[in-house]
Structure formats: structure tokens, C-alpha cells
Image 1 (cartoon, each protein chain N blue to C red):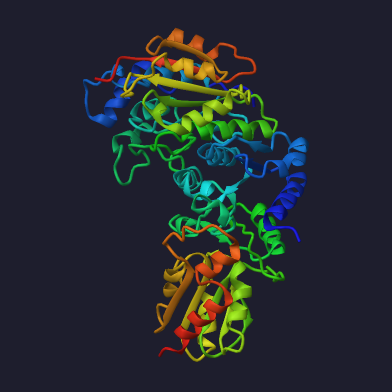
Image 2: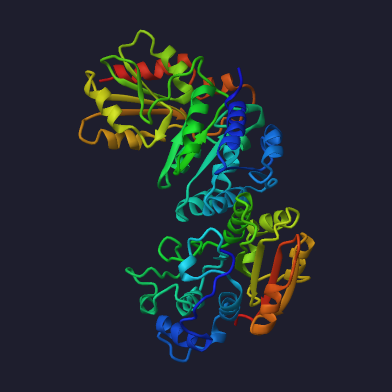
Length: 233
Length: 300
């Protein structure tokens, strides 16, 4: 399997309604979730995975490392048919598979259980190494982290290794809503660039800019896309 | 005689040739030993540098793609330092792997407490689904490693410089009976066996030998207790004293019994020196063990 056509069950315009099924808040807008646009562009146009290929060895992997606030993730998964819409209202309840942090063993298509920060990027590095060792050089691995999550030292272990190791199947999406208390003087992208990554910073609400950044070539190097959104209030 | 760590390297290098599902992850420790294997299998011998959170995370990631990772460094840096990675990147993700530690509780006393991990098995015991193997001889280490590598579960293999004079057959996962007696049961774990046998020489005690301590073979302990005159049990473990006391108590829940848990004390010795000196310092040499075991078993 190299590419998979996905049948969109719902569109971007449905995400607000899907989010409202979890929050019960009708006035909720897409802008209220920092990850929504980047997730949508990934699942709509970039990731080669569908509900029918969640176990296929050659699928692209998306790892939500920043497990906090996964409603946008669940909404996109529902829109793309990975999740039944009817499961959304149970969000966070005892009998629901949808927790405030996702559990991969409860939801098909969710690649990792997350919530504790700083686990996704090392797991993504291992996933790329595992694919490579099996001759699977086509699948891409994406991991989403937050700018404050980047505080965790485990990320720096991973990014300092992945650059020199030349893991070009690895992609990190950093959602930057300026929530890191001490910020990143010199910019987040510079951390990745210094470690040998290809990196770009774009407007995290601009779908065309995100798509272009997600699909830019980066031969021999891992890729980081920093998606800047409105600062967390 | 090679050490358990030497045997780990030679065995694992050979297993890499035979089983394309296996991959080794290192954080500099033992990397020289894997040089030849790395040349043969550059994609399956992975050294991440001195980065132990990444070491364990990479192991979990490899497992997510269907490989069987063998993750190795000193016990302090494999279990203690990245403990949350062990908990989440394997157990919570629902994947398996083999963790292989060196250094144990007192393998390098001159290195001091930073390189001692007497609490590793107790920590692993807080997690679900980990088998814990404590070989007492390089041959046993090889057998346990081969079995763990061929499996699918979560295995922790604890290697040590301390070794018994001769290897015992590692046939099943359960405890084996080395000696039978009527006045108490002593469970010797891995490299403690020789000292336990010397300490109980001439005593009327049963000696059980354990190389796989988790799952704890409660049935073997119940059988040994039932075959003797008393339900007095002494556990001799080469890591934190009392690590298996609760497991022994659970196994004997239906029987009035007494349990003494011997092992490494919590308090830091703050001594350097040699392994034998630390065994004596911990009261785990044959003479100290004899005093402690017979003292406990003769109390009624």
C-alpha cells in the first residue's frame, strides 16, 4: 500500500458541530482549539491512512503527543470515519473510549496513548527506526507536540538524535500558542535546525500554508513544522 | 568464564542474525560489544547516545511497528531514571519488549551508589504484566534471554557480575527444588543460591531456586510448605530486602505462616571496595545468612 484514498464522512465545516457534541457548547468555534486546523489539513490532505488501513504496515502514522485537549483530534477522527459520531457525546465518561487523554488500545487509528508530556517524539523516533529496519521507507511518521510540551527534556533527547541520524521519515508538528512560560528565545524552529532538521514556521490557521509546509521536500533530514496560532490567553 | 553481560552480547548478536524481528537499543553502555552486530545489522542495532528517556521511548516505538526491542543499559539508567517511560511507552501502549540491565545492586561497588539499583525489581513490581528474570549464571542468562527474545510479552532480565559456581537447568518459569527438608523453606533468587546453599548446609530446610521471580511461583512455595513441618519461609534476594515478601504472603494467604525477607538494605552503605565486601556489608555472605536464617527458623 502506498496511497489510500480517504472517503470524507464529514467536512471542515462539520468540525464545529462535532466539537459541540463533546463540549455541549454551541458557540464553540474552531479557533478555540489550537490544533484543529493543522490536524484537519493533515488528515484531509497529507496522511495516507484511512479507517480501513489503521493496522496496515505501510500506513502513515500520526502520534498525538500533546494528549491534552484531544477534542479537536476526536472531531477530525470522527469527520474522517475513524470514530462513530455517536461516541462523541460520551467524551470523558466511564463507558466512553474517549478520554481527556487518548488511549490507543480503546480507539482504532489512535497510534499512541498520551497525556504525560514528552513521550510522543521518542516513540515517533522509534517508530521510524522500526519501519526503516523492516524496509518500510515509504510511510511517514508525524508527531504533534505543543510549544510548552517542548519544555520536557525527552523531546530534546529525541530531536538531538533524529537530526544526525537522518530520519527523514520523521515529521514533528509543533503547535505554538505561546504557552511555554519561558518561551523559546531565538524561536522554536532554530532548536530543530541546529540539530540538523529541516524546519519551517507557518500560520497555523492558514490551510494552504500548512499544506505547503507539510509537503515540502526534506531529503535526508527530519522535518519540523511550527504552526503558530493565537497565544493562549 | 564469561560474565552474564558478555553472554548477553554474544547471545543477542547471534539472535539478531537469526530473527529479523529483533532490534537492540543501547545508550552507549555495551556499544563496543555490539560493534560486529551493528556492522551486520545497522538498522537493528541502535545506539541513541547517553539519552535514557529516548532509549526506552525508542524501544516502545520499535514495538509499535511490530519489532521486538531488546533495550539495554545499567539498571539505574534503564529502570530508575526513565521509569515513567517504562510504565507508559511499553505497558500503557500495550506493547512488549525485553529490558536487559547490567550493574544490579552491588556489581561495581567502587562506582558508588549512583551505579547501584537495588530497587529495580521493586519498581518493576508496581507495573502490570512484566516478567522479571534474575539469572544466577551466564548459562541461565542465555537461556532466559533466548526465551524472552522469542516471546511477545514484557520481560525484564537483570544481569549481575555475581554468579553461582554452576548453572542450573532453566526449564520452566517456576521455582525448582534444590534441597528438601522439614524445618522451613528458603527461596534463593538467582546469584544468591551458592551463599544460601552454604548457609543452610546441615540445616533441615528446603531450598527453592528462583530465576524468574515475576510471576512469583506461589504454587511451588505452597507445595514446599505443605511438604515440610512448618510454614516458615525465608526469601533471599539480591536486591531490595522484602521485594517478594508480599508475593510470598499472598501465596500463603490460606496458611498460618512466617516470612523473613532478606536482601539489600534501604540504607546506603556509602562504601566502595569489592562485591564480596558489599555482600558481607549487606549480611548476604554465607556466614551472615546462616546466622539470620537459622535464627529465624529456630524461633517458634
